[in-house]
Image (cartoon, rainbow, N blue to C red; front, side, top):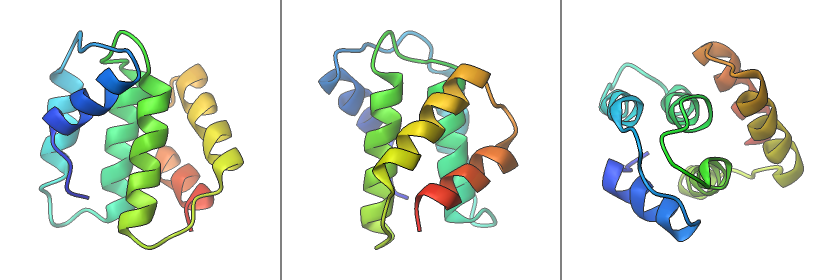
Length: 111
């Protein structure tokens, strides 16, 4: 997935948020360049940064949903909107840090 930190900030501003901490976003964006990682794992790093670390003042879950739909479109896959919304809410509420778990949840919602 070709997304930059500036893209994420712009997307989030559309939802009324502002960047408050960018360390986790920098780490997740850095992972996007790792050719050894699969696409879902790269998305999982972005999700963890957005949903668990809450880098934005508002709109973290909406930003994650937008990123997920962009990923699905780019990969020519279908996203189950309801399941994806459930997974986003669950990851955020339970502070799920394990990338493998986040990745599996994404694979279930985006096929």
